[in-house]
Structures are given as C-alpha cells and as structure tokens.
Length: 91
Image 1 (cartoon, rainbow, N blue to C red):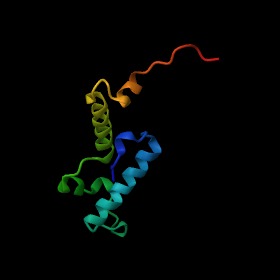
Image 2: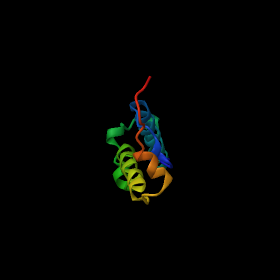
Image 3: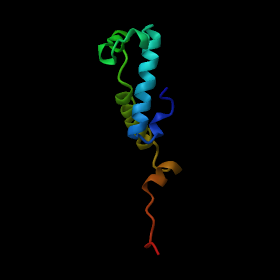
Image 4: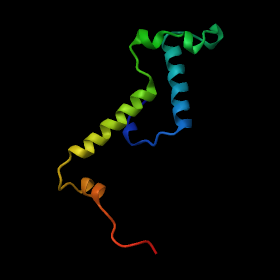
C-alpha cells in the first residue's frame, strides 16, 4: 500500500484516507465486521499482527527516500539538480 510513498506529499485528507483503508484491511484480515460493533480503539489486532501505524511508516519511508538522494555521487545529475541555484531575479 505504501509503494513509492517516499515521493508522496503528505496531506491530512490523504492520511485519513490511508488510516481508513488500513483499518478496513485489518478488520478484513481478522474477520471483524462493522456489524460486530467492535470500536477501532477496541481492536488489538494491529499489535497482534505486528503492524505499525501506517502514518508513522509513511513518514519513516519519506526520510529513507531523502537518504537515497544524499548518498548519490556528487556528479550525479539528480543530485546536481537538488543543489542548483537560479541566478538573477524574477521579473
């Protein structure tokens, strides 16, 4: 679900949508239906399955992606673009 997420802009509405999707998947995996009326906070399946909160995983992956850019060689074109400074002033 987080494939390529190191380049995503993290917005609040995206976080909410990801959390909802994650809870639907956790409920599906553990066969807990909404009709069972088990509140989300009452679910201990995330700990039982050994899952990390999706938002913290997303933020951690973003940090890893930046490390990839910083480890590139100095003559790499992508790394040069990060350090590029535009000369002059805006009209």
